[in-house]
Amino acid sequence: MNEAKSSQSIAAQLRSPDPDCRIDAMLRLAGAPQPELAEDVIDALIENLSSPSKAAQRHAAGALAAAGAHNPAIAARLNALLDAPQARLRWACAYALGRIDGALDLRALAVLLEALGDADGDVRWAAHELLLALGRRHRGVLRNRLLAMCNDVNPNRRKMALYALRDLAIRDAAVIAAAGAACAGADSQVRLAALSFLKSAGRAGGQAIDVVLQRLQSDPDHGVRRAAAFTLGYLDVRSERVLSALRQAAADGRDGGLRKAARRTLGRLQEES
Image (cartoon, rainbow, N blue to C red; front, side):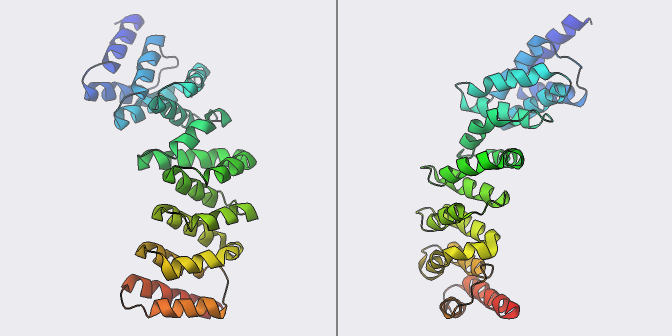
């Protein structure tokens, strides 16, 4: 089979109504990347980036990334599609760029921040990992955009912004204040993310001691109360007010998990003292 016919055959498989046939073709392309894919094959792979199937999207991105390692034109095509009208295509292009060494840059930032609010947790955490890679090179830009996102209307985006700030170890006073405010938010997952951030901030997070104590003493979610008890062990605050609140939680007869968390934190504070 000559090169043109081979390309037509691969493109036909990539457009097959059978999803297994399409994925098999993508895996073969990713496993044995050609120095330069034919345009119709690239087009067919990009079409699969819009697929409703996460598996098809992932394997199409893998095949494009394998070819893109040798062909800069593929990264250019992907960057051009970051403004596409379909959110799934925008995300898949950013994901594929993240798999090509050195191809992901700030042009993909808006798409990655958008993906933090996705209903699919796999998409959110994949976007989080790519944002961390960008943040190591563009820390100031990421800090400002993530801090602004702590007030986003989408609770998924708020909590993922807090996790990204935590994992980038961005802990200035404004960010800590935003995490403290998020502790009083309406969504329990956002409150948990805020407590996780403050826990990682350690002594610096002690600025938010009042809101953490409030979560321990009155949060309607038992998981948040337990997280608050653990967080107090890392803020380096040993005031009588903190110790008294922990003793009260350690004697709680309704929640064994809270009792355990409070006792563990009391032990930690007393040992470090």
